[in-house]
Length: 108
Image (cartoon, rainbow, N blue to C red; front, side, top):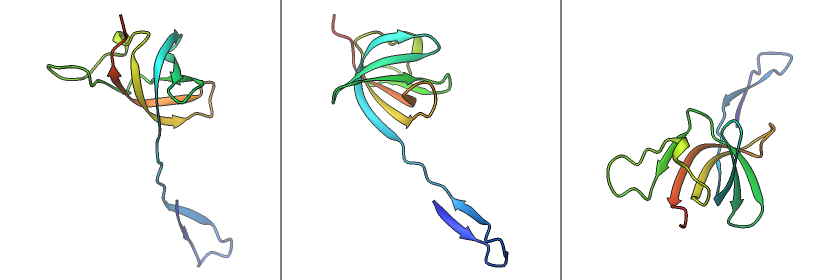
């Protein structure tokens, strides 16, 4: 965050001039679907995250060989390997995924 202090003010009211947010990212496999667009994902490095995928999130199928790689949320299935980019949440779920990349399909 870049702060631009107003030196003419006696209250020293600091105002953010610029805020940069760096997203978090992890990889894992879908283990379960929960209500309200929440995925339970077993992380590659261990542990489980509940991931909320908002309706306006970008979901791409990087395994697609033809056409646009855009993938509806409803076509994700248990066992899909995902790379999820977003932010750790202060809400009821662990993570909010704004970009979901399907990098490997579920094993049969």
